[in-house]
Image (cartoon, rainbow, N blue to C red; front, side, top):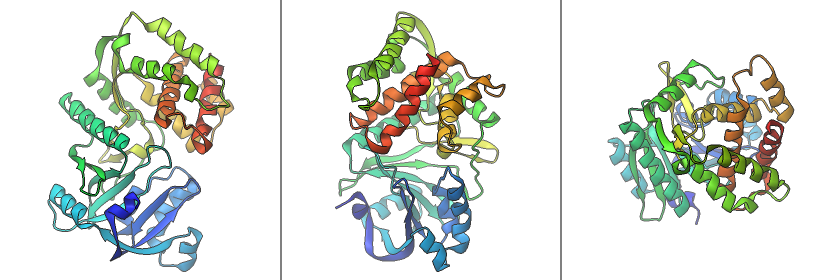
Length: 363
C-alpha cells in the first residue's frame, strides 16, 4: 500500500485529473475549483507555465486531456486525515490538490488545502521516518525564525503521525489566487534575505557552525559522490575552506537552503518564502542568492557551465564573488551527496557534473 492509498479513499468522491511530466512528477487536480487548485503547480518551463494558465479553461476538451495524458479519477480524503485538517483550519469541509513529489530518496506528498477560492495552507506527508525528522526540524526552524523576528514565513500548525503511519506536517500560508511568482531576481528577494541575515546573524567559531558540520559529514562520506566524478579536486576544495576558516570567529546567519522561485510567491507586494526543511542557523551570508541564480539558470534558462561562466564575466554578473560561489558549490554538492545517501544515480547525478565543473573552473 502506497502513501497515497493511505490518505485517499478511491471508492468515490469528487472528480479529479491526474497528470504528469517527463521528469516523473505527478499532480492530482480537482475539476471543481481547478484555477485555485493549480496554484500548487509550480512549473519552471514555458510549456508548464502555459499548462497552468490554460488547463483550468480547456480541461473539458478531450484533445487537451489527451495531450497531457490526464487520467480521470474520483477520490476523497480518508476520514482521519479529513477530520484532522478540518480541525486544524477550523472549517467544516476542505478541498485539496496534490503534488506527488519529486522523485528522490526524500520524496514526499505535498497537498494544497482550500475552501472555495481561499487557500488555507499546505501539508506534507510521507511514510519515511527520515522525512519525519525533516518535518520536525522544519517545525523547530520556523519557530526559531519567528522568535528572531523573521516575517513572511509560514507558521507550523501541526506536526505528527496518523494512525496509518503517515507522518504529516501542516503549515499556514498567505497565498491567494492572485499571488504571483517572480522568476527574476529583484528587490523583494534582496530585502527578504537582508532581513533574514540581520535578524539571525551571530558570531561563532567556524568549527561550531552548521556550515562546518555539513563539510565534516561530507568528508566522512566523500565516496558517496557519483562514480564518474573526480573526488580529489572536491576533497581538496573542502580542505582549503577548512584551512582558511578553522580557528577563526565568523559572522554567519540563517540559510534557507532552497531559495528558488518555486518555494516563494508575492502577495500584496511582499515576498512570502516557504519550504525551510533544509534550512540551517549558521551559514555564510549570501549563499541563498547563489542558489537562486544557479537553479534558475539551469532549470529555467537551460544554461550550462559555459553560459554561467560567460554571465559571470559580463557586467550583469559583476555581483558574483568567486570565493562565495565556491562556498555555495561545496555546500550544494555536500548536502545533496548526504541527502541521497550514496545512491546518486540516474537523473539525480546530472546536476553534480555541472556543480563540479563549475567548481573546477572557479578554482
